Image (cartoon, rainbow, N blue to C red; front, side, top):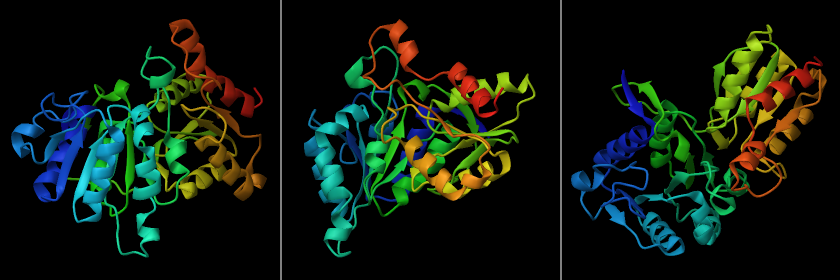
Length: 325
């Protein structure tokens, strides 16, 4: 085992896959000369050269389209967005071309491409740089959406995403790039669409994903002091979603709290809530609780931002409510 940062796990996954397959390349703003805006491609230009690690202009629509055309013609691009807030400039290419080309061409074309970069908030960055888009992309048939929460999962899932023959949205966090964790020395791959039980428990199930799951861990530690046993499921993949893992857990604990760093309307939590009430209503001992950001753009003020973003105390409160404590 070795200890790596999240950014290093991302870099390792891309580099290992590029050594294995010459059709894979990386493109995006500052990925080459600057080693990536968050240093997730450090050293890759030196190893693979400027034809496979490509700095682009600030033109997300343009380089997304170029990469999609390239993928349709036998390559396997990795497109880095400096932030998924900027992906909105290129979302037409992602939604109307990458996601739909297999169906529209009757299977004559596929689009093996990964769009990756940070999502959601990263501190005091203001309303236009603090948005979560997992549910936006997960709403689109033809796209797979991955949101890892730690370096181990990030590496294994990114390698799986690069090898996938369908377009994959791979969403990270600026605030996790420095997180450290032990990962295996050798190669490993984590299958897309399989959730992970991070902590086993018996009293209540918490489902989450991405960096906000850390608040669930903090809450579980505090709740354990009151002899409340919390089971934490990390979705890892938002679409396809591992509903079976959630269902199995809820049938054991009979209570569900969903923690998500996104606006509440039409959220991932909404989908989970619907599926569980539809498939496991008789197992529920309390209504499902959702914890999301406030239904407003992210504020710039640190005081207001703290109120806007979910935290461990919100989780503790929700757990005690579903347990009628």
